[in-house]
Length: 116
Image (cartoon, rainbow, N blue to C red; front, side, top):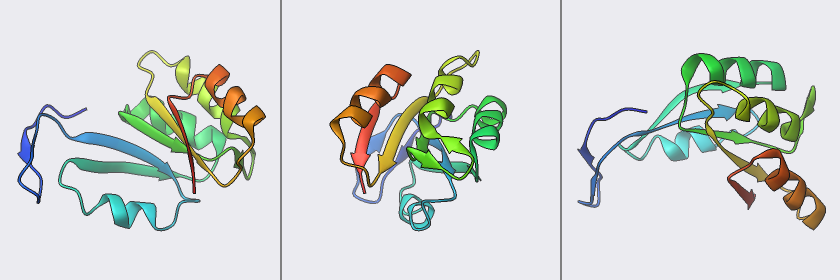
């Protein structure tokens, strides 16, 4: 996380810049987040293994995951990220509106669950 202070375009002062790691499955999200001075996208990953490895290397504040990934489960990635020496907050962003998946995400250590 960056300790820099900055002002957003709406004049609100922020005490830090949030750093994100995204999965490439969220095509428009990088463009949307780039509009905010207080958000920095550190990287993008295609799969569970690279998401976990990049999280360990880049140490983002937030990792945005989907439940279903090309090589496995976002819940598996979430569990692995939570075991890192410096775990990141994990936001599950998915199209699956399933109560069981919400509970499973919470049990895996996710900090939030948002529907696309």
